[in-house]
Picture 1 (cartoon, one colour):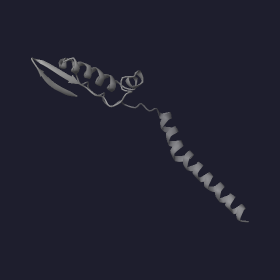
Picture 2 (tube, helix red, strand yellow; picture 1 turned 60 degrees about the horizontal axis):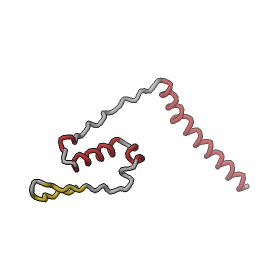
Picture 3 (cartoon, one colour; picture 1 turned 180 degrees about the vertical axis):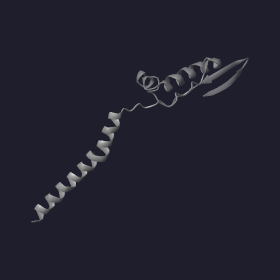
Amino acid sequence: MVEQDLGGGKVARIALIGSPDFGEDVALGAGANNQQLLLGTFDWLSQQENLIAISAKPGPQALSVTQQDLYLNGFVTLILVPGAIGAIGFAVLVRRRRAGS
């Protein structure tokens, strides 16, 4: 962003955004941050700095986990994954012994 005094109370302002996709609907739909930056840039270019505001970030959200979710997580991480790794290892061992004979 560049601001230059032209004299006589006139000011020239230029804003440059580094991506051609910035103003597209896809980029604006990706998050509210692009929308806030775009609107803030327009407010600055129109010399309406009092309209520019920094919104608060949302705080951390609690994750609700049921007892069933805990059991499923424990089953997958403690039994299913190690069991699958062991079964694959056993299958490789048997295949190598048969190929070596």
